[in-house]
Structures are given as C-alpha cells and as structure tokens.
Image 1 (spheres, chains in turn orange, yellow):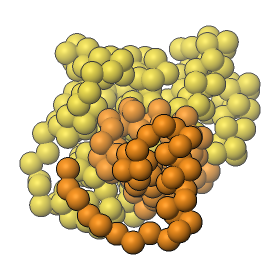
Image 2 (tube, chains in turn purple, orange):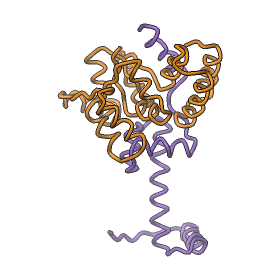
Image 3 (cartoon, helix red, strand yellow):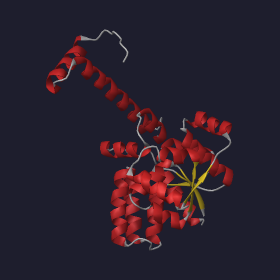
Image 4 (tube, chains in turn yellow, purple):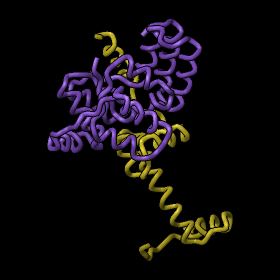
Length: 96
Length: 165
C-alpha cells in the first residue's frame, strides 16, 4: 500500500470524520472507500454516456461482464441501445 | 444462419435462460477473447456457456488479425472481445449479436447487421418456441438485466401480445 499526503478542504475533512464516526471506521479506511466509490461512479457514468463499453467497464471495475450487468441492473442504469437500433435489429431475422 | 456473439448478448441470454434455445435457432460463434471473458469467473452464466461450448452448441473462433482488431479498439474505444466480434462479423458477412452502445455504434459505421438479446426473445416467441406466459416471464427478466429504454420495452410488450416481430 502506497502513502500520499494531500491537502483537503475543511468540508471534505468533516465528511470523512462524520463517516468515520457513523461507520466506526478509521479515517484512512473511509477515505480509501470514498476514492474507490468515486472511481466506480465515474466509470459507470462513462458507461452510461456511451464513452465506455460494457467489457471496458468490467475491466476497469475488475468485475466479470456478468457481474457488471448485475451491477448495472441493481443501479438501474439504462442500456445504451437506442430505439432506432432496436428497430433495425428486426431486419436480421426478417432476412433469414 | 451464423451469428457472431459479443459477451453482452451472450450473457444476457444466459441470464434469462434462453441461450440454449437460441443456439438451436442459429449457429452461435464467439471469438476466443469473448470466450475468455465470459469464463473468467465461475458463475452460473459462465457455467451454462461453458457447457454449451463443450456440447458444440457454441462455436469458438480464433481471430488472427491482431493489428486490425487493435485498430477497431482504438477507433471506437472498444475492448478486445467486442472488437474481435465486430471483426469476425465483418470478415464472414454475418450479423453480430450485441447489447452494447459503443459496439453498436461501431457496427453501424462498419455497415454490419446487428441485433440484441431482445430480438432473440421476440423471434422465438413469434415462432411459438416459447409459450406466451413463459415469454412474458422471460421478457420481465430480460428487461431487468437488459435495462432497455422505455420505448423499446413498450414496443416489445406490444409485439409479444400481437405475436409479431
């Protein structure tokens, strides 16, 4: 585990302290959890915005594709498949 | 009909227990990388896919054109499995089953035919391969895991009711 020192705003420090008390965890643990959750949030947002593929999301979150689908379903994050694409998909079986 | 599968559609169909039925409707081919990705962890979905590969209901295809795959990855921000699936679809001129935004966008640019897990469900229901009540149950599950948008869900419900695709 590496060590870094960084300056935090008073508000940020207060939030870490509040969570530390609420969840009976050390400040370092809380800070690490927040960084991890912030990372996950960013990657999920990138996926939602179509900037990251499903497989890419799975890799960055160190999950399998199946686990990523479960997580997206749990969080209710809509699939990036558009209605127009869906309509076009019917051509495949129509051409069969 | 031969269809190349990306991991997204493969896993969605496995999650709603429609993958075996789909493999009886079409010839499913997955690139090596997709196989590796979906079997990376021992889950129920992975177990089903593994069995279907052993039973040769799902074919696995090696992709030798690493340079072309890397280019697809870079051009469309795709991971390796998605790029390999699109590459195989282009190479063999067959459709690609994909439930992923960037992958579909790339497929459109490349002029590929594509479809999603929802199309398999509706196709099988319209051909009476699924009883109406079972099809509705599968749709509920697929909506949960596939997280399709409202318009798609409404359209799918109406097609299911009318028995059309």
